[in-house]
Figure (cartoon, helix red, strand yellow):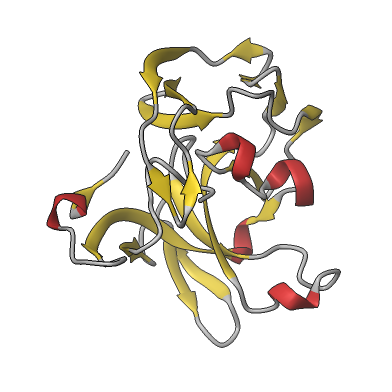
Length: 190
């Protein structure tokens, strides 16, 4: 549920492993770099702290990049700040729906205006999400968050994502199958 409403359980996603460059798979070494991840990109990456939590060894995660190398990030009272600027969002009302058997109706549905990548997020009406104190993103690392801020295990909990752990950029849904095939989910996402 961590990437709701952008992604739902049952979404099959498309990921470009070449947006950021070409790597040698066995050595995990980038041999050609095209561009760096940008704020707002949805990325797939290896869990960064699997040494401390072996249950996640080999697990791929998907989150949204909100902090770039050198950025100062903080999150409190359900507001993201990047380089001491509060990121604005538009109120879209209350979210309606159930996901993976969890009632999500009544969550606050917002459109976060992050650089040139506006995207929808969910906020828990019962209280604020996990805070992140003011942190500087180290060189070669990224700060990532789920779009369902109250239900996401992300950089607020386990720290920064090293660039070499990034597998690729997610850019769309090619199929959705949960209890039935839902073609209205197919396409790109924010």
